[in-house]
Length: 423
Image (tube, rainbow, N blue to C red):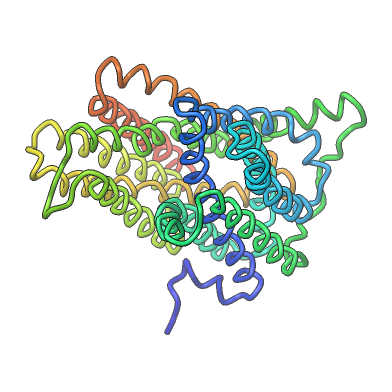
């Protein structure tokens, strides 16, 4: 049976090896997310926000200043080393547990360490994809495949946690996380011959001048390719309202309005909405990773139009429908919102990997992660104020409307740009 284009790269043994390790580590990271929040609630109650909030700050600092160190490393060494240290940081709270019980301090240190190491691993991974899969068509497919892996893991993590809770204490979810990182590191080591990217085209100067070059490299590279740079920044900023709409507002809406359908309600209702978002997300990944769009830039922004409509529809349905009819409408909104995201993200990665080269890909992607962390941190703060001022539904609608407007404006601008290029 012929594989869909998105899954075709898995026929390559090296790609299969890297992907298998990526699956274990991404599910492990979500296990850590679930377990760290759970353990922090037990240990510190209202201080639980520290465990998640400090991660954004850590990503900002590591992203801004990490290039001074990371740009001097080969991508394969950076990825393997970050996986090894990620396993160590995951185990810190486990070791501490056997000496003095659950420690909020060790949970914060562990969360900060993993957040910083994520800023090492993700840019390095992006820089090796053109080496791992040189063909541009296959690059789009593998971007869709890897992106789907991250998105599916966000949904499978809580389910795996619920299953593991039947057999092991919550603290050993972090042991499972460390095991996932170790397996990922071993898989990268097994395929490292295919992960050696081209030499860095920009040699860092010694001393403070070299540090300044590393600090500003991503910004200067984006200025050199303004269209691609603008697309990357827009994507990073949109992560703010996206995170508020998906991770915060939907949970609050379900809690406040208690939608029910066919006996499903409360946590089951929330799981159904998130599940349909994941279904749309996966479906969008398969299509976006398989199709070469004739007008990729404008098509990318149509993905945001669909996402904005989905989130806005979800909010409007709360205003106009009774609770016993609300859940199917919320699921439909989640499905449409999930479908739109990959149509932007997958072509964006492919364009970045073809416009920039070698270590420059890592520099640019690291800057995107910095802006994304700042947007999500700002989104968390603004959302708290919005929830108090106008409620979760209006906040959800506002986030959807903002994403929709960005999609429409971006589509019109890019459509004109592409028409000029084709003409």
